[in-house]
Amino acid sequence: MRPDQEQSGTDVKSGRPYSPGVQAAALAGFLVASLLVAGLGGLASAANVNGWYASADKAPWTPPNFVFGPVWTVLYTAMAVAAWLVWRQRSSMTRRAMTVYAIQLVLNLAWTPAFFALYPPLGTAALWLGLAIILVLIAAVALTVMYFGPISRTAGLLLLPYVSWLVFAASLNWWAAVHN
Image (cartoon, rainbow, N blue to C red; front, side):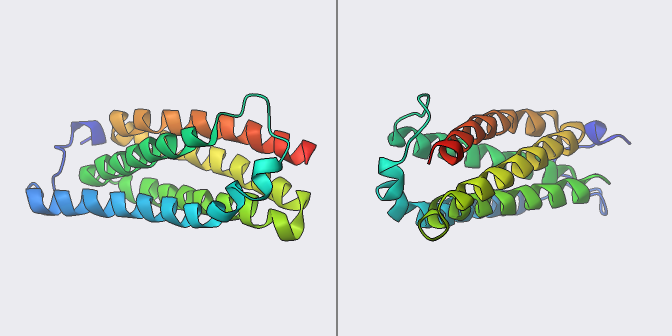
């Protein structure tokens, strides 16, 4: 049976649907994982957004700081829901898809401290490291979309704004690395 033909939320081994409680707990787990990455990233950037970054030379297309929080909240929520949708399918491709998802989540977590927290001690080298990380992150998220899409079209589509935002963020990172 193809993944798109499987019944959502069904345990492949027993053939029975997951209970609503199991599904709710899994969704909560994915949301907590995303919020944990967001929170840890926030800790790494908090002191520096109003520190060195406030006076840094930023790209002319940089949005105001208040835009980043709501955008990332929506993106992290969409990522969690996408992962949950794939998890629910429990297809033969799910494990590989979730592994790639976990890798991109770790890369996402690595970018913020590299860009924000390492700049004071390392200077511009930290911004170039951040750029390298975000470029690998874009590739990892694109790969995640490619793995998620065949399992759950909705999950793949939910990650497309994330890829778009990362490309935009990479352009901001590039400008900062070149001009600071």
